[in-house]
Amino acid sequence: MRGNSFGKMISITSFGESHGPGIGVVVDGVPGGLPFDLQALAAELLRRAPGQVAGTTARKESDLPEVLSGVFEGKTLGTPIAVFIRNTNQRSKDYNELEGQYRPGHADETTMKKYGIRDHRGGGRSSGRETISRVVGGFFAGLVIPNIKVKGFVTKMGPFEHFEIPDNLDADFSPYHFPDASKTTEIRDYLLSLKKNGESRGGRVCIVASNMEAGLGEPAFDKLKADLAKGLMSIGAVVSFSFGLGEEMANLEGSIVSKERSNFGGIEGGISNGDNLLLNVTFKPTSTVGDKARAGRHDPCIIPRAIPVVEAMVKLVLADHHLRQRAYEN
Image (cartoon, rainbow, N blue to C red):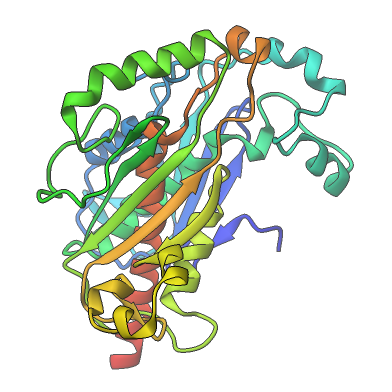
């Protein structure tokens, strides 16, 4: 295995490079007879697509999905679902000088050491464009668990922080997925300033899964927290994962922590307890900075476009464990 697949009962296998013909994914294990809406899939991909929001990459891609198999007359067939998204706005010549260079913080050098060859145009398989396949997979995973709502939002991006879980998780936090809408203009100006100066920033994202079912996860190696960690940490720019109180646990006594079940973020003993899941991931700053960032088409902060990706990975994990649990019960 080369690490291009994720999941057991429901799985995705992604393929393609950022400057090749396109990005594709095969989603296997989706039950038959589930309602499918192509426009809804396209709308979900548009949330991740480049060139939608001021202060992000200038690359423009429509990211229109072509469903090649697994769907018929608006229903899933239960067979492998193949989806292809064509690349239409590559500027591969922008990367010509990188053919003999390795960019710190990217996978340029490590890819060369692993395979002895690499596609230097835009990072190849390690490009953020690979995450299209995850969003597609997350969309179909959402059909499997329609009652569970997964919501991601920014809690820290540069000087902007939001510590409280929003009361209304159904609210639309677009365009920057920051719960305090009064900061939208300031965030836009901040990102444009970063872009102008060739600088970048990281930040933190919170994900809440509500209307959870209890019993998801295995007691040993396939704990729900372990699979969530793997799914979220597999996103290229993510550098840390926590749930519940997370690192704050290191500063507290057990008598304090054990008073409230909510401190455990919906997972006890590696198994969901039915409470809302509370997850946090940290993103590193975009590695391309300086003159290369000013001249190229790069995100000064990847987080606004990463929200649908983190939501998708959580849905994939939850759908996978939902199907595993149903197999136990049957």
